[in-house]
Image 1 (spheres, rainbow, N blue to C red):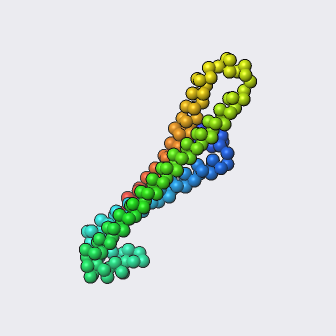
Image 2: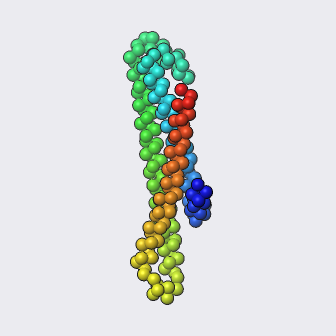
Image 3: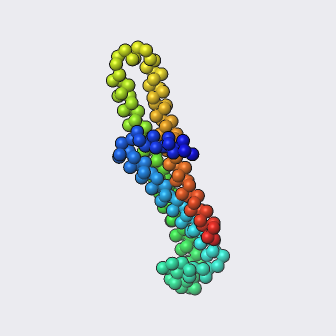
Length: 178
């Protein structure tokens, strides 16, 4: 575990401040995704309770009395309204998750591109004699693969793991409370 954290610290140390902020933003998006997944679990449990007992609509915060009055008038309309609300929430949640994944890939690609181009500029500015002793194609290929492995295989994997950890914690909390 210590070596993983050490590797992440080294990866972040390579980056400039704006790139580190983008990676921190990905962690924040992961926390929000965990919160949304938790809310999704609560919504599903709530929907199951409403289907089992329509009177449980009265326990819904803020709009509970209104939903109870609607269910007294028409059970089907109240149930349909709750189902539509849960579906709309899940569509919005999944759109957010798609945006989160897009941002993860975008930041990883931008970081990989920036680090690769910086290292490539350094490689091209070494003394000319260096290029005679090394296979240039092999050096460029190693450079590209190594940077890709470090940031997409290492740092992005750590961010995704942290995001999934937030989701798991939220779902465990739901299961312990219910």
